[in-house]
Length: 282
Image (cartoon, rainbow, N blue to C red):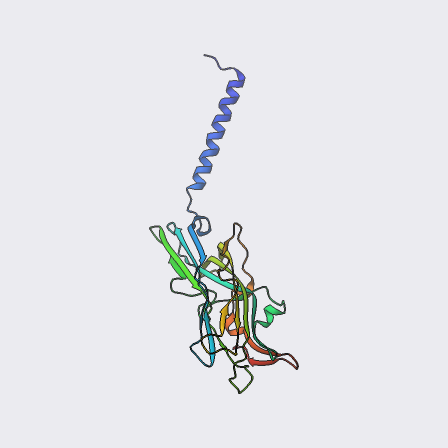
């Protein structure tokens, strides 16, 4: 059977297509980079449903413990061909903080992050203060040292909550007379699942979570110890948001100082100038 010219053209197009597919297949056969091959299989994030607990056992301070924020991720890394070392784990930064303890008509104490408060930085590291930039280095991270012959599957997890002490008396007074009348706290955080190349510092953001913790405790200092504090709204916290589109990590979230070392305790009286009660640690 004789082929007509259009059929010859079609045949030539098929030959060229298969050649092109062969080229594509050969490219795909090359080892993928770490960036291309790492897979996040599952991400879970929540804040415990238990309300904040209040402890009035001390005559000097009120203590409270908030529910835990929790995040975990299952990650799969196919065999790594090169001599590369990657750490995968959680990095967290605080991007908003209001923390006020009111003492009736006397004034209020407040924990503050000056650079964040003044808008000089977008966020501040919430690292453990040792393993920058990581939130921690136990369950929070996993390190893969290439070359590896087999795929590596692992889980990295973290949790966070607040457990502070607030003095019953005015913090700049020698008197321990109970005058604490309310505690308000509102903090926001961004938590990233990240892979970092230990040699090149190449950083891959794999997942982004945003969460917030709010607190309002009303205190009647005239009542007996053990009966003074009442938890107000919100009793249950808003659940974290796992973002569909990743957010970049601000530079200050990767380096010293962390929030614990940068925070300052101020006394802000109703009248008169503010006083630094506890300066920053750095």
